[in-house]
Length: 176
Image 1: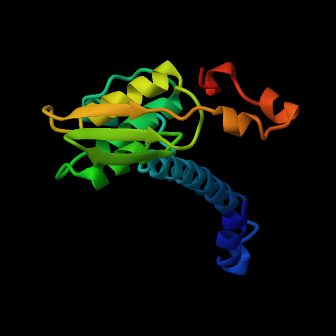
Image 2 (image 1 turned 180 degrees about the vertical axis):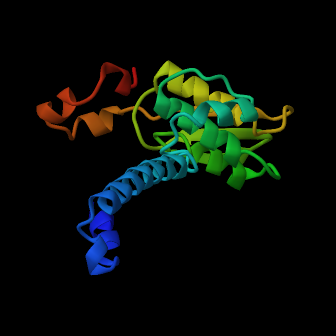
């Protein structure tokens, strides 16, 4: 509405109250508002973190299936985008960093790529882990093996916790 007032104020005084001119400015303002909304929506489609309708197009171009939640689909797309180039530990780390939990340390030992989960305890949810594995498999050369190391609560960590802290963990967080 501010633009409408600015347009009207820029007109000669005699036209500012003319009904036909005011109606014309209102029609222009309506079109301008619609175009601004469309422009904002299109700019949101440029960034994977805010993509909605363009996500299906990008997934098709990247060869990804459109399955999972919106956040999982965005994560898979980011991982696929980051997974191109010369394969080294840094590239694999960038792919792992695109994972929504993102707390993975990548290493290479005796011909095996080692992915160590350093953040959350226990094994991640199956769908999330499958998406990560798929992204890593599409990034690394096929002759290299991948090992996944998970973090669990150990007896020495549990003995220092209060009951309230213990109740905040899932049973899958503990090593047996």
